[in-house]
Image 1 (cartoon, helix red, strand yellow):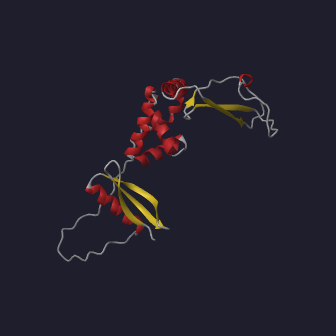
Image 2 (spheres, rainbow, N blue to C red):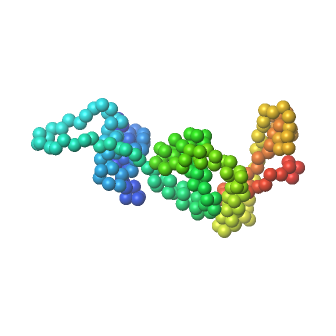
Image 3 (cartoon, rainbow, N blue to C red):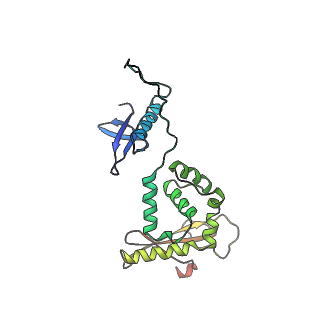
Length: 226
């Protein structure tokens, strides 16, 4: 079956508009165009869907009654409010809003939606309809995270959340090795045991989680203490 535009009611009471097709008795979503909350938004999204399926083609009007001329519906902007609100609610429930930095949250949001560079994260956020903070504030986010020790603040909240919910009676731990194409060792990168018999400096990265997979903090230490 050829792709078509369909309307689907959502749990929030809105109407999702999608381009879909049907193969083997199953519907497949080709593209999600957005969610409408008013008849005007619905008409605009339906018109957008028709334009995508039939670019440059108009609709024949067989109703010969005189009607006032109306301009075609135009989608000026869209906003993925539900997914933004859901991620922000989880962020706050975990206590991560102890870091009072909207640019940092927006960077987290962008990386969850589409892992990419800091610069390209501006595009991801714009496509979500988020009012992106000033570009300079956004691009210096990681420097602020280092200077104000965001890692330890978030790590403490991860530990508190795990203790308050599932507990830490069962912990899971695993490690992996990262190699660096560097000629010399330094205080962190050292040549060590390698199953591939590599002689490049390396670091061992460990991951400690509770029974639900929630991350728990681990300090930097020498490989002899691992």
